[in-house]
Length: 91
Image (cartoon, rainbow, N blue to C red):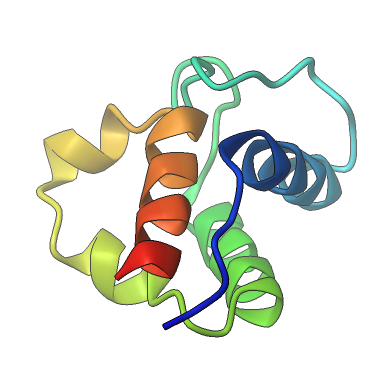
């Protein structure tokens, strides 16, 4: 079992990762939509997944994404990924 992670810490780390992937700070928050507000493309999700795996080696972000329907992926918000990462540490 991994050490507990606080939601605010994970959210800030994820925001930093998204900023790295996009190359700019777009004022990302938990409610920010990857598709509608950030315009994330597939390659950007791959880059984000790599960063998540590097930081949280016990989180299988790729498998989690692959289990989702396209409509669910398109509706993802930053807070959804944050919740997944926090829950993974508790598992």
